[in-house]
Amino acid sequence: MVSFIGQIIFDQAPSYDLAGSTEVIQYIVEAMELEGNYKLKPACYNIELVNPEDPTCLHGAPWNAQYSQRIMGGELPGNNNTLVNNDNFHRVYSIMPVHLPEVDTTCTKQDTGCQLETITVTENHYELLNHMDTGFYPVGAWEMKSKMSSRQRVQQSAGVQFADFHELDEVGNRCAEINDFSVQWAYQHLRPEARANYDEFGVKLVTGDDLGPFNEGPLWIWHFLQYNETEDGSQVVLQSPMMRTPTDYFVQSAAGFHYCKVMSPFRAMEWMMTDGLFKNNGIHGTSNEDYKSFDLFLQ
Image 1 (spheres, one colour):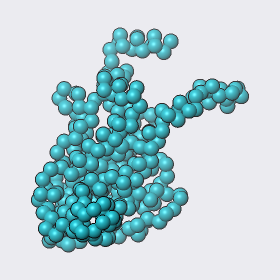
Image 2 (cartoon, rainbow, N blue to C red):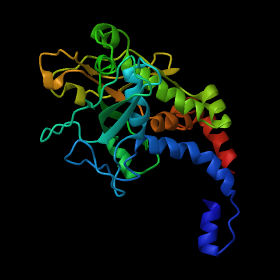
Image 3 (cartoon, one colour):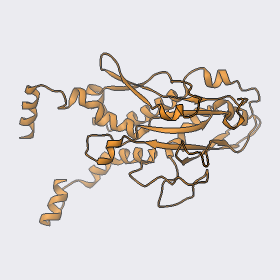
């Protein structure tokens, strides 16, 4: 910033190391793009389920397109059969029309290289005060509201005729599995210095059991991703409200779904580099002696 201001005001040659700066922020930018952060572009929010390819707006969340539905769907039978997902940004509370996830193709256990094509729906939710851009409130999404097809539905479409809803979707915590992957991705993409700082001072992000199911009306929409600090203050436990229905659900228009509140990799990385450090390595809640040391550091 000093070099930039000096160049603008005093016409000085920049003294900053551009290559070094690029190395520092490259994964932060990648995580922000994977989230489909609304500060990059507005969400498309088209009336059709599949948004147009429009350079002026964001089609969907690349994170959910690349990872979330694949994790939810599980490993596919067959030889090199893969799931290809198309994620689309829509307001999840829209009813005219309502936007729902789909599985648009089928594969069999005997197939080789079959592509199971799916569509998911995402809406990013941001804290109200982050729009003020003060630097204090998080820039990343508080949660990504993700409408996905259930593992049972994916497996049935992949050729597992008697895929069991209880074993595939009710046993375990599918949303926590997705959020675990997000936390791990963020940690693995920290620079060594940032990782060491988080290891020493950071309040650790971990996942807990999924909450719900919230299958009635808008309950899932308005129950938010929970960030609960443990009693000793060493961890923040993420718990995702979820909605899940079997493929033989009595309301067929709502059958075969598994909705999650997904933590974006950008929000996880932001926590590890900034917000999760305040408690043990910041000036928030510190003693007078700490403030004196901080003043000496600034001098």
